[in-house]
Image (cartoon, rainbow, N blue to C red; front, top):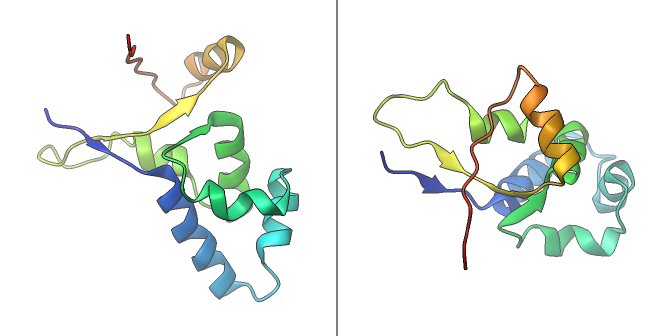
Length: 112
């Protein structure tokens, strides 16, 4: 089975722009406050291929879009490849994900 890589920053940017179009009060500053980061980090974040899972969960909530479900959804056509997203997780975060009924965790260890 072939897997495709997903550039999470691009997905976030797409949803951010959609949210700005639909909510005239939503902007970079509001978004930054919602996800607890400085507003100067918003546009550089759109360039990131990977992202911390806690931050991704805050972004999902702020944008009203479930990035985790999008990336790890099992409801894909059999001929469609499953996407991969890189996330940085602590041991505690990994344990929380493993204990959740909503997620499955696949580890790929990079030995480089």
